[in-house]
Length: 165
Length: 209
Image (cartoon, rainbow over all chains, first blue to last red; front, side, top):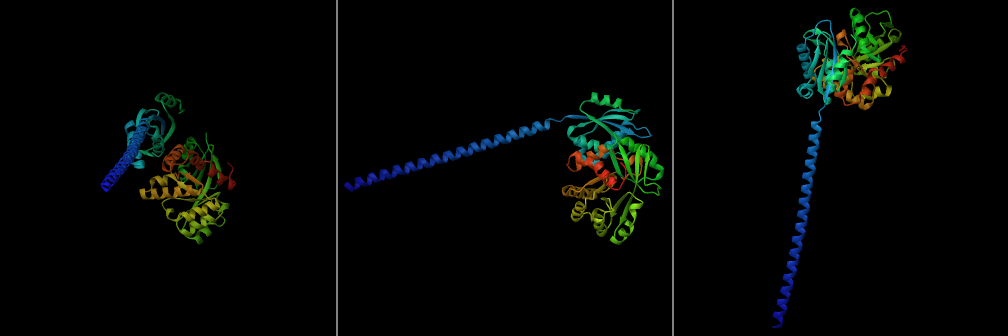
């Protein structure tokens, strides 16, 4: 009788110990999982923030206006010059360079052989380098001088008419 | 404001007058002109100082030594375009040589050893812009790698146009922009290559600037 009682008490004790152990393990597991989950959430947040920053940087493309003058004894038309510029830019910096800079001849005065090119602030140097390396336009000898780079077309036009002949 | 030096003009006498006009317009006040039988060493024309220079193309050490003998009497500026490894090494060591040309012909002989030798003797490397633009894509890539190496070593670099006609002149702004886009270096370094470094060479050779 006594032995049965002792055995039953021992089994109850063992069972309770096992229950406590299972509970502790369960708590530990939950804690670890929650930490992992939080970390995951944080990583996603950081990544998302980074992406947003990149998007903000990309959106800030500012325009630049390059005033130039052509030295040549022959007359140069707008189309001829635009074609020569795009060809030279493409041969120097490739198609990607051409697409990124996208030089647009916004203003051209054929009588004075002067003009204004619009591009982005990031690709300004590419266009200036290309301008000074144009040596022929449709078989005519030319020398292009990049005079000044400005941020507004108003100022660019002012500079354009200020240059002495 | 004129403050730039074009270190290499390869024009004939017939186009030189016209070229000087345009060079002054672009802001150059000293032009080093390749010798075409001129009687002067240094001359001033239309406000631009013209300095006679010679470019020696040699492949062997012996022939280069012979060409260099007494050359400083006639030419204030002596530049070597090496077409052999021996002549390249001699040009880097010799005090009579003012600069070494880097173009499609000499590219194979200008390497790390050459860079360290030129750094030791403080000899500048000359890069003709028109020759760089004209060359093939492969040569352009090779020139780019050499230029990068020479900037890493701290060797002085001079940019010249090697213009044969007035329309082959390159505006200093264009040179700065081109080098800035090619190698991401500060524009002040490129400006030094167009003004201070060639001026030092000329002063060393007794040319009044």
